[in-house]
Length: 223
Length: 223
DNA sequence: TCGTAGTATAAGGTATACCTTATACCTCTA
DNA sequence: TAGAGGTATAAGGTATACCTTATACTACGA
Ligand SMILES: [Mn+2]
Ligand SMILES: [Mn+2]
Ligand SMILES: [Mn+2]
Ligand SMILES: [Mn+2]
Image 1 (spheres, rainbow over the protein chains, first blue to last red):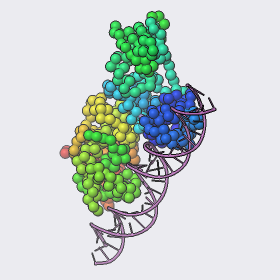
Image 2: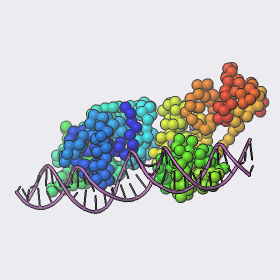
Image 3: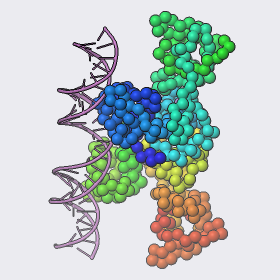
Image 4: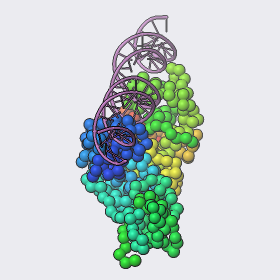
């Protein structure tokens, strides 16, 4: 793969992937929001990405990743999550902060560094936030788990991952000790999209429903 | 320190430092060569760097680093050499290649990553090519050693460092096993700027004088 | 079906970081 | 001291990646 794309191009392609552009058309307005640019700017960039073969633009519906686009997105996500592992496991840097630190490094990492990093880290399968590390040049965007916000009252689950990863959310959940591996039980779900009351580690935690929709869990069969 | 400078600005400032801009004015033509741009482009950039307070331009003589410029250069060199240590010592990547791989990473490395890397690597003092790692925000550009090209016939020395570092030179010297720590004796110096014949590890190696001027050695007193 | 929110395009502007060509200027050396 | 080589500036151009303002278009819900 060539990989002489700019940081900007890489971030747009990654954003489209993270917004589901491998499955459904992503409205360009969504991309603009996520990239913190105006819709006009995002539109210009989408035209460029289209002409470079990374996306397909369905008029008034949104953009879809091509095979090349998905490959690029996965390779960048791969780099980011590997660096997150390094920053957290080896350098002992902050779990929440590692995401944005890795977002800088991901664009400056040659293929040979990626592969050496994989060996050095012992071929990790997931980032510190529980999200899967794609294989090199992978064509599929792996996703597992159920949203914590959809867990029924009285049921239990084990936290698998936080997704999407944003510093604000990660920092908050880290502070609440809602980390991958933690077991939680839904004690109460307040009506009208109200917050969840969770039981975990002999403590009670109240969590807004929007936040809970960013937490992926594996449901535990025998509560 | 702010550090919201672009990769381009950082590379220009680093280049000026490596060309001796902390001591003597560096002709802008030299900078253009090293950055592989036209003299006009280098001139434009020097104007920008001047207005940003990183260099002082002495008309028709060259550019000198200001304190801010030297600090920036040292911080970038620090990042590069630390990454070189990581790439070579931990990831076992190629000794010669590590220089350019680190040259990408150096611009994408936040201060907290640098400091965590220092601890993780055990506070190394020199890069794998023997050059000193500056302290954070250091004002001095450390340089030690004598040029191998100036070692008298019959005399011996231990290789300290290769400087400046370029992939071509590093790869060649690596292949010849001329690495930091190696002891060499000058057996013969051919006339008219001819090559040196060196004795090392029970072998004889012939080395061009220009190459020998990139090898820094510590002279050994008792041959 | 009508209106609006969202989407698309056109036009013109900014900043960075390069380029070429041309001209002017300085310094050093023969 | 005259010329050559190196240095400086002017002028105009390219590509990227943003911006604003204005206008046009579409899809969908009330
Ligand atoms: Mn990034
Ligand atoms: Mn992560
Ligand atoms: Mn660099
Ligand atoms: Mn080095």
